[in-house]
Length: 156
DNA sequence: GCCAACGTTGGC
DNA sequence: GCCAACGTTGGC
Image 1: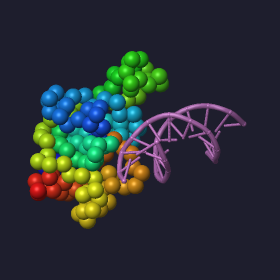
Image 2: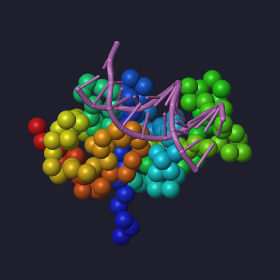
Image 3: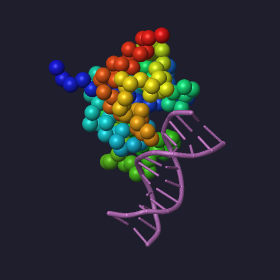
Image 4: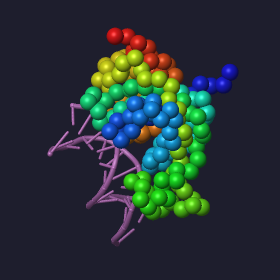
């Protein structure tokens, strides 16, 4: 059996929420403009990998849902689109620089697992999301942490 | 709205 | 290659 890879992506719910993903069923995860996050998508994410969806900037912030990778990394065309908020003048058709994957909706968690709750949980110590100052919008998450968050969401 | 932390840019 | 200035992220 192949090593299981699990991920976490952040999104601002006012920009694109888990409800939007549920409605769309699948979407291209465009607009990632950080090299490390891009590399995780490009080099790590494979079709079928499960992804926790985190709402940042919300009140409160926390993990709200589950998605699945349904297309592996390909060029993010929004970088070439002058009208896009994600336009990057350094990107060219020959070297688009930025990549995206497609994600499909799996489920909303039975309840949100808040950032405060995760910070307080000894079982999640060391999780990248909880490290101070970390701003990655796409990151790997230890499968044990991934499973633990899903378990928490099933508890009242 | 504030501000700490971080990544990027650009002058030198 | 250094590093200060700047812009962004994101919790609070």
